Every structure is written in C-alpha cells, then in structure tokens.
Amino acid sequence: MEYCDGGDLLKKINTQRGIPFSEEQIVDWFVQICLGLKHIHDRKVLHRDIKSQNIFLTSGGMKVKLGDFGIARILNNTLEMARTCVGTPYYLSPEICESRPYNNKTDIWSLGCVLYELCSLKHPFEGSSLRQLVSKICRGRYTPVPSRYSHDLRLLLTQLFKVNPRDRPSVSSVLRRPFLEKHVRKHLNPQVSMMLEEFNHTASRRNRAAAEAAKISAGAAHAAGNVAPTM
Image (tube, rainbow, N blue to C red; front, side):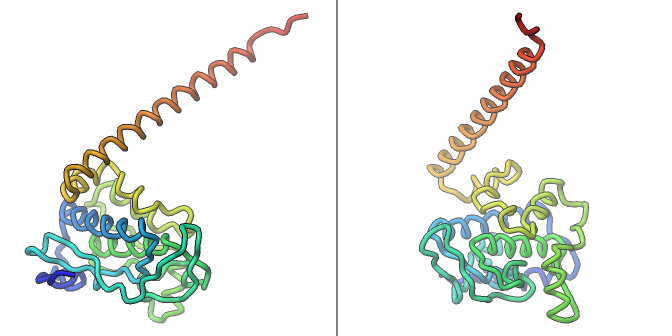
C-alpha cells in the first residue's frame, strides 16, 4: 500500500474536537471505503477488522485506503461461513459476539460502525465492560446520529446495523443508493461508471416492468371476481 501522509481516520476524528464533519465529506470517504470493501468481497475475502484506525488518508486527507489485512480470511465460496472470533470489540458484529458462523455481512456491520463514528465522532456501542458492550451490540441499540444528516444517510445506518446479518445489504447494494451515486462516479474510472449507469438503468426498467405487470395482474383478478358465474 502506498504511503498515506494523512494518518488514519481515527486520528482525523479525534482532531475534530467535537466539530462535526459535513455530510459531503462523510459520504465521500464512505464511498471510497465501500469501493475498497467491494473489491475484496468480490474476491471472497473477509477483512474482519474494519475500523477507523485501519482506514488511511492520503492526498491531503481526500483519498482513502483500506489497510491492515492481518486477519483477513479467504472463503472458498460465497456460501462458506467463518467461525474464528476476531476483530476489535467496538466493531464486532452480533454474530461474532454470539460465536455464530459469519460471512461478509460481518464487515458490513463494522462498516456501519465507521459510518456512525464519522457522523457522531464516537462509537455507536459503548459499555463500561466487555459484557455490557457485547449486550448492547447484540440488541443493536444505539443513539441516533444528529438530525443534521440526511434521511438517506440515517436510514442507511439502520440497515447496516440490522442484528440479523441476512437483513443487512451487501456492499454492492449500498453503492447503488441514489444519494451516493455522485461520489461513486467521482471515484470510478469512466468505463466502470458507464457500466454502473447501464446497470442502474436496467434495474430501474425491470422494476417498472414488474410493477406494471403486478398492476395488470391485480386488475385482471379483480375483473374476474366481478364476473357473474354462468349457469
């Protein structure tokens, strides 16, 4: 990894001294983290220790690099689950806290912890002991981030913090959120951006077609119910 002269994200958060980051800055960093995470998830690699201290800044604090793959794990296929309890306590997912098998959705939980930190300048789950911390994580209860941030951003956080890993979005799904689109384009090369635009256009077209088909089907069923039976 290239030298990152801006230090890590935790250091950046601490130097804020309570002054909030703008949503524009948060989203720009977050998208870059997601793109890095997508790169490894597409290759069936779990990072397993995503935290602000493992995210590094370069180019005057504008570019983000995902680092420290010391406990990363390669899965043989997308359905395989890992079992080793690893990671940093504040960023552990409920499934790891409960010693259950886990997959790449555990990285998504940790991603939510980093996003929360950027919005509130503190951890989403804290406790006076490890037992208390684990209890809060497993319940998925946290203080909402300040209302200065958009509904889209706050909604995304609730989805990243779903206690059931199956209910959490994949990183690819996260990157398709409309409010992130501008930043995704900014950090992708033109060819990939065009592919993303075509994908979004196709998905939108399919959704409209499915909705129209459902409407027609419902109308047909209603009409059939109103036809008097013949003798």
